[in-house]
Image (cartoon, rainbow, N blue to C red; front, top):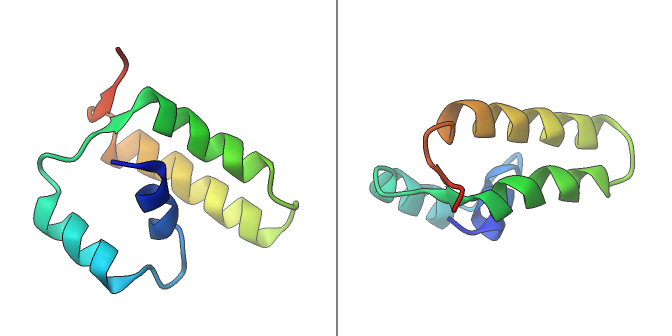
Amino acid sequence: MDTNILSELMHVEADAAVVSWLDANWHPVYITAITAAESPFGVERMTAGMRRTRIASAIADMLATDFAERAFTS
């Protein structure tokens, strides 16, 4: 899965088409180690505040739970 899709899921109201596609295709979905690294890095570049904190927490949770066994590292 691309970083852009992961980023879309962080929106309070994620695009319905993206959510629908992910729901229909969840079982073959994996992320790369690059995507796993880009997401927290991108959040760190955001202005400090509640939105950054919320997104950082959501990404950490998603990487630890949803993609714990779904990341290609090589």
